[in-house]
Image (cartoon, rainbow, N blue to C red; front, side):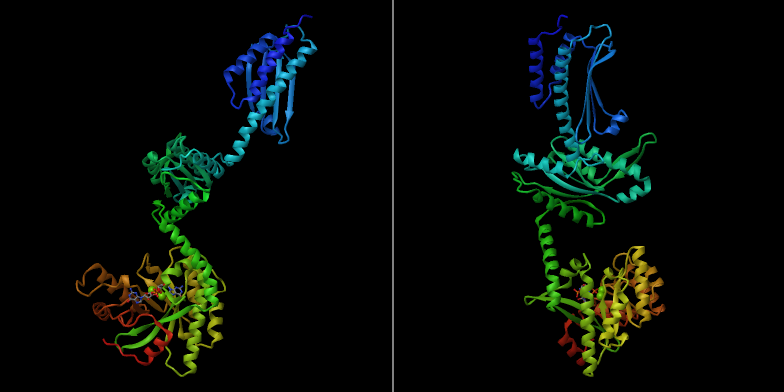
Length: 561
Ligand code: C2E
Ligand code: MG
Ligand code: MG
């Protein structure tokens, strides 16, 4: 039988085929041209390659199927190759012939086998690269992942393109509420469409990647800033095309403007800054866009310093109790004191504002509060033993304690360790904003009350003070914050004077003792007098005093009022 294709021709095809296997990009047009040439010369009817990522996909027919030649007359299979990789990916190649075409001789079949194997070899390599890209640089939901961000930074850094770009970290606003309102499925759609919108706006010169949940990081060119910021600030996303249902999605964004030129040493250079700015943006109730500046880095270092030296500070007794008297403005006598903490480190006095908020980031604050209570009880014990005059001392108790089911036992065990009568101790707690904490707060206050320990609601009038707080919880004392106290009694009908008058009279009628904090002037004192508020605490009388000075003050109680 005469051969359809000469040996030379076969070698020519083979050589061409090998060239394709070597190049990294496939010139599809030239490839299809070659396939057509081969199929025509070998009198083939059809050539098909199939690729399935898993056996299940093969079973369901959900693969990628390519047919680069088909004359529409295919009848019988001439060559069929099927290869299964160790990852269970399946690749198949099939060559069909027409019925009428004379049988191909074994040598021709062998040649076709060889060429089809080559095709399958380089096709599977190309697919593998794609699968690797998908596994490595996309997450399961089809979003680009952190590795894709790192790769982008690497490439842009090598090409000196990072200078002037804008990196960001965003956290979508109230996304769990969005999920609750429109359902998780629609929530997923919103997330994906928001990401697509952002990606399209940023374009090829930048990247958006998914950190997880409703958090994304990315980088874009400064000229896109306006458009990208508009998306951060709030953009409508349709989640139901048929009913045209949509929702406005906005984000808290932390942004870092890369200087120009900019050379990156590690991903951390950029990540740390966008995370810091992002955290600041998130802490602000209104969210918005926060641009990184070096003060944030200093703040982070400050937090680290406080957290790392707190334990040793506690062990070395670096925390001192200062006492600020509470004065009865009628009798001019000290009727109580508040214990306030000072950290004395390297002969410097660190005020609470610098370390309390840091200690409240975790439960360190609880250990400090127990330490303070312990030292206060120890002082009271000593005063009692020395036969001195003793007045009730209030100790601040952070909200962080509220979830501690052993709190009450712990407080009582400290007080009882020094055999201090319970009525000498008052615990100051601030109001809370969530329902869960409210019920914990109520449980703690009721528990303290039934143990005979006094309770005070601190900083009343700051933030969202609610009347429920004083109606539903059996406090002994209401401490009114300085910001709630009118500056003077003139203009008695001003809103602040009216509110002060009615809130304090309500508290009086409810049998609460009222302490006014932050009294600094004679005018404020006049306001207190006119409103029958007898107890004041403030710089007008005393600053918080070291224990020795406080002891002297108790002996020498002369107030010039
Ligand atoms: P706070 O419990 O409301 O304490 C009153 C704060 O007002 C004290 O600030 C006090 O020094 C200040 N103050 C008193 N009189 C005046 C005045 O006339 N004018 C002005 N402008 N301020 C006055 P301090 O000692 O800096 O403490 C600040 C906050 O730190 C306290 O507010 C309290 O919330 C917290 N804190 C202090 N010590 C502790 C503690 O041991 N444990 C806990 N959990 N918090 C504490
Ligand atoms: Mg207080
Ligand atoms: Mg206060």
